[in-house]
Amino acid sequence: MTLRSAEADEVSNAVERAADELLAYNRHLCKLIHQGRARPSFIVSHELPLDEAPQAYERLDARESGWTKVVLKPQMAKSAHRGPGAGPKTHSTHKHAASGHQH
Image (cartoon, rainbow, N blue to C red; front, side):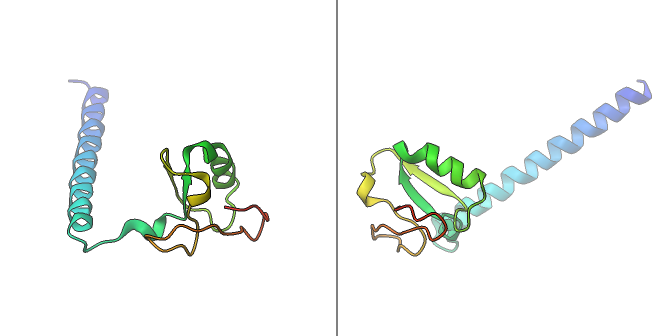
């Protein structure tokens, strides 16, 4: 085995270990979410119908204030989407302060 091959094996093993650790961590997080002990919803800033995906991507890409993570829901009607400040079971519209667009 050459030095290059040994280094490649070492890198490959390190990547494999990191992937295994990430999978274990994700399983742990999923378990906490399922048990109601963790709530990832604070990350989600908007829930939008699928047809608004292009505009949402533009806002995320532009790093507009208040846009952190968007959940796209194909079955959601345009008038029922949620943005910042909407509760978990309420449907409302809000006006994005920086753009003046209704969401």
